[in-house]
Every structure is written in C-alpha cells, then in structure tokens.
Image 1 (cartoon, protein in one colour):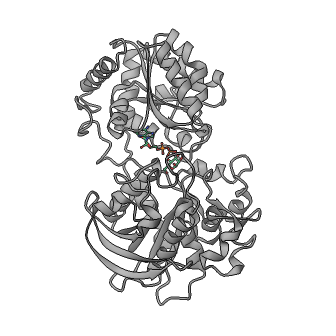
Image 2 (image 1 turned 120 degrees about the vertical axis):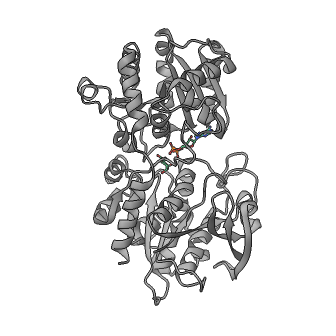
Image 3 (image 1 turned 45 degrees about the vertical axis):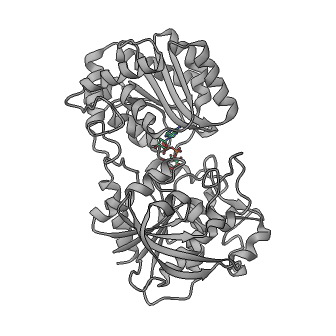
Length: 482
Ligand code: ADP
Ligand code: GLC
C-alpha cells in the first residue's frame, strides 16, 4: 500500500514540537509494517538542503496564480522519498515555519499551507505517473486542506482514502473569509457543512469535516475533544463524526531516543545496567553549577512554554520542592513573562535551580538522562512525548491526568506498586495542591530506594516503539481502501 504523509514539520529537519517527532518516525514504522511511504513537505530551507538527487516532478500554478515547482528526491537524513514544494518566496523566511522572528504569524499562512493540501490532492489525482498513493494522511491544520481539495476533486480511476490526524485542536488555522476565493475551492465548501467557522475559514475544520477518517494521538484525547470543555467549538462536529474518530497513541522513535545508544549522553545506560544514569546526573549537576548531590531528587522539564503546559503550577510549588531537598533543571522557550519568572527563580537558587531559555535537542536528551523525575503538568495534552522519553530514560514522569498523559503514566499508588504496574506520578486536580501532593509522593518513593529502582526499571523496560501505532494505522488504511 502506498501512503503519502503530509506535514509541515519533520524531525530532524524542521521541528517546533512533537508533530515533527511523529512525522519523522511514522514513515519508517509504516514501511516496516509493509507500506511504501513517501512524504510531502513545504520546501523550507533545511528540507531543500537535505533533499538529494531531486528532479522536477511538475511545474504547476497555485490556485491564486503563483507558479511553483514540485520536486521529488530522497531526504538524506531519513532515507525517505519526499515530494517537496519548491517555492522560496513562500517558504524561505527567517523565523519558525509559522511565525517571523517577532513571533507574528506570517500574513500569508493560509496560502503557504493551503498549497500543501492542494499539492497533496494533485498527488492523489495521479500527478506522479510512477507512484500513486492509496492513502493521503495529513497532519494538523497545516495539511488539513488536503481533505477539502480531495473531496472536491473529480473522481479518479483509483479511489484514494484520506486520513486526518489532529495533534492539537488548540491550533486551528483560522483565517479571514475574504481569502477564501483565492483557494480555488467551490463556494459550497464555505458553509457550516464545510470549512466555515463563525464566519471565518478554519483549516482544522476542513480536516475534521472532509476527511474519510479522523485520528488523534491518544485514546483519551479522542474522547476529550468531543466535550465542550476541550472541543474548541468543534466538539459538536466531532461527536457527529465519532464513528470515524480513533485515538492512536504515538510511540517513541527508538533510533533517536535510547539511553544505551544516545550520542548526546556521555554515560550510556539501560534498565539492566543503570549505573551510567547516576554519572549523567552528577555530570549535569556539575556542569550547571548545581550542588553535586546524588541523593537530591533532580526534577526536569523540557517544554514549550505555553499556557497548555501548566508550568505556572511548577512556579507555585517550587519553594516546597526545594525545601524538601529537590533540584530543578528546566529548558524551554515561549511565553516571555514565564521565561523571566523561571530565570528569576534560578538566579535566587543557583545551587538548586538551573533554567535554560532556548531550544537545544542534545541538551534535552541530557536532561532526560540525568533527571529522576520529568515534570509534565499540562492542563491538556493530546499525547505528549516528553513523559515517554522520561520513561525510556528512567526519569519517572509526573503528570496531570489528561489526554495521552493519562494513557501512558500509572501512579505509584500502593496497589499499582504491589502490581508492579506503577511507572510515575499522576495528579487529578489541576491546581498547585494537586501537583504538590504528587511531588510529595515522588519524594516519598525516592526515600524508599529499592521501590524507586524497581519502578524505574519497569518504566525503562516498557515497550514504547512505533510498531504498535503503525499496525493500528495500517489496519485503518486497509479498512478505508481494501
Ligand atoms: P508539544 O508537541 O505539545 O510541544 P510533545 O511532548 O509532544 O509536546 O513534544 C515536544 C517535543 O519537543 C519533544 O521532542 C521535546 O523534547 C521537544 N522540546 C520541547 N521544548 C524543547 C526545547 N526547548 N529544546 C529541545 N527540545 C524541546
Ligand atoms: C502536539 C501535542 C502533543 C503531541 C504532539 C505529537 O504538539 O501538543 O501532545 O504529543 O502533537 O502528536
């Protein structure tokens, strides 16, 4: 089965969050499960540079009249065939894939990402005479218009299925309706039974409405987004389409995240030979100027700093965490006020708190390797990957009971300790008190080292690869195009 994955990000080339990790890992996992997978990507500079031996597949004109080229080549870093939209005017810009350096969304994002969906629909329609996708699988609002364009494409010899994955409903790709006519969709697409959303156009809604099947990145999140509280106004539509909505839990790319073979960490380790972890901890404490104290539980955070991630709760309980003898290392970037608040706490507690504002892939690996606990107190979390990296690296996740966090972390309650199913710490009440109680539970377990080590070994040994998710996607693809 030929599968075309469509996304705006792909690790290791372009990444703002977990979407890139998924897009980078899923193709190989699908191929291992018997698919022939290719990707379609916008031609951001790092993608163009990595694209080897490319040829021009087609010279096309966008619905708004802009000429461009689709290239086909092999991404060297992933050894993966890729279609790339070569249009530097749209994609070669300083900043992130979505925003300029002042964090302002690019004004023409509706064009930059509509084009991704439009080219996907052209590939579905046979643009490459040597490779016909049977499934177009698009990810998040950036690729969501694929579903709309495919729904309005003339019938083809081959029926191509369309799967749309929601990674985060909070980012919906909402644009002024006056741009609708530029997109080349029939006017009937702009209606309540289409991509119209409170008089604007929503790319997210296009994916949710027009796809053959919707998936999201954990079973619990698939239920949560059907509620008013977490539905962002789409819950009604999602309830209507509940029979074609599935939660498939993400995996961990074990070629990238494996403490036994991780080039970013100096002292490799695994569940059976964990000694290197202690050395990683001492090395990091030393390097960051923290007190080099093996018996101080070291808490870690690697996160975007946005409201979603619940980090304000960490600020509220930090004094108690330190008073109990803990330490904190955090890396993240985002909200300026919150960045400063964390910086101030580090300045006030140089021996126990270390804060790094910025983005550093290697340092993220080192934090998971060195810490005892990974904090993920998100208010909502579609899947969450950092708690899974924490599990793999023996840094027990401490999480709020939502979305994928609820699906992956089992609290150290007495019964789960006895059953050997516990792998971390979970709090239900989303407030400082709820978080603090879980932090206290972490200290209590840390004081019982044999129990701590048993839970940690269990966490590290849990199977978390992509094979399970890949099998579920392949099942779904087969149902959609037998
Ligand atoms: P989200 O996609 O909502 O940000 P995930 O947990 O799914 O959350 O994925 C976050 C990814 O981004 C992980 O790979 C994590 O290690 C990485 N990450 C987040 N912030 C940083 C940072 N400042 N430096 C390096 N990696 C980061
Ligand atoms: C989104 C979500 C995150 C998820 C990631 C990958 O960024 O916020 O929870 O893990 O996508 O699916």
